[in-house]
Amino acid sequence: MPMGLSSDELDRIDEVVATRRKVKRGTTLFRNGEKFTSLYAIRTGFFKTCVASEDGRDQVTGFQMAGEVIGLDGIVNDHHTCDAVALEDAEVCVMPFDRIEELSREVNVLQRHVHKIMSREIVREHGVMLLLGSMRAEERLAAFLLNLVQRLHARGFSQSELVLRMTREEIGSYLGLKLETVSRTFSKFVEDGIVEVKQRHVRILNTDALRDIVNPKACTE
Image (cartoon, rainbow, N blue to C red):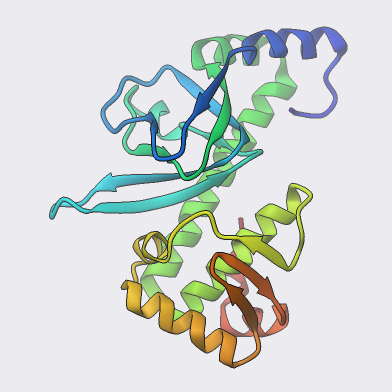
């Protein structure tokens, strides 16, 4: 929610986001080509967005967590351009976009907030393009971990510990790396004393070392 809203404005926004939807792990919130009607605020859980590549495999395009908005891809041409799949049991608030637009015209603070969310998504996508365009495997994985822990910390979680909701294969798909490369790079970080890994639990022991590996500009959310 944006700051600086009156109680009346808050009540009106509450009405718009009153509908909640549970999404079971492994099921789809929306699909590529589906008509766009709503944005979704993630209350609990973790999602990945992906598209089918030419050889039929899923290409992961992003990971979204509680406190973030998903579905912005559909605004451009009124159809979603990717699948959104729950990586764990999740719950979202359904925000009908026509209602959001209508309310934004009356509540300037909300309009600015929607623009800020959209801008953040553009900045994040730009960061991913930098990752895939110019970075070595170590730099890509370091940037990914720094970005993930930064986003989690902004939502009140630990600055140094995280549970990876996605598989190594999904991380590789997102970063443009083979599964073996992701596993090998994680092992190198462990050997160098940068991280501690126990299955999906990752503890960052040396944040500065990760920052030294990567260009800090690529870690922007």
